[in-house]
Amino acid sequence: MKTIQAIKRISIRAYLAERGLRPTKDNPRYGLYRSPLRKEHTPSFKVDYVQNLWYDFGLGAGGSIIDLVMRLERCDFAQAVRFLGSGERSPIAVPVSSSVPPTVPTLRLLSDIPLRYPALVGYLSSRGIDPIIASACCREVHYAVSGRNYFAVGFRNDAGGWELRSERFKGCVSPKHITTIDNHSDTVVAFEGFMDFLSYLSMKPDEWPHIDVAVLNSVVRLPKAIPFLEQHATIHAFFDNDDAGRKATADLKRLCPNSTVIDQSHLYREHKDLNEYWHAKQHRQQSRPHFAPKRKRGMKM
Figure (cartoon, rainbow, N blue to C red):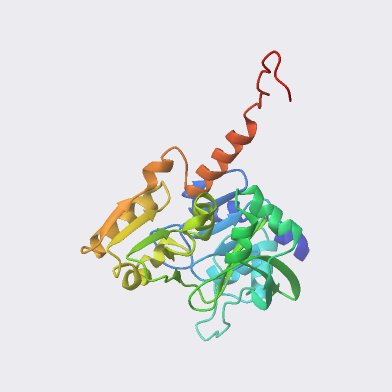
């Protein structure tokens, strides 16, 4: 029998592939899947290939391969360990009378303080986010998972939950919800995630006190934002340049027939989202060579 640590190193990616599950988005560091734990159309189940961890953004839960097997096979910890340690991948037979609840590590909020930790500020700066904007919109959130303490950039939603980001982590503290900012404007800007919102403010800092904002914190929550969005005469949609983002824009136009919905994704058509565009633009500007102006003869400096 393998040790617990050896079992936790079994590839989640390979395990899902054995079940016929493939990522809809894939890169060397992580893959995005349609959740095997619930029905969904937009992929929100992330597998971190580097750390070999999974996270379901819809459920607000995640963990190791053991936690995933406990959920998928409806078994307890010991059964999941035997299942993975034996090398067999046949489904576990669980008695009908078994009442073992599926458990996964959950994030527990410890505190939120002003954003000041250099590594977090540096992470946001590396994404092109102005530190002053970040400090005004975000907090430094400390949380615990399985008895261990962590911290990340936190963006609060309307239900009191938090979207969490750091260089190595993307997750949330439940409950999941949208984030709205009401400055009593007749125009609203809508984003999928808060990094796009922060990018927009970094590009247009003077608009911060005047605009209304809706951040979906996942396109699946668009319906929750409609009561707020439909109050506005004009809606500027800055959704991702992918199938999910295009569908969300189409749904927005259908669900808000009395508003003028302007699809702004053409502004960053060569990029996945607004943040990627803004980061690339800043990188190009910083990479341009700077030439000193030629001095005219006889000119005094």
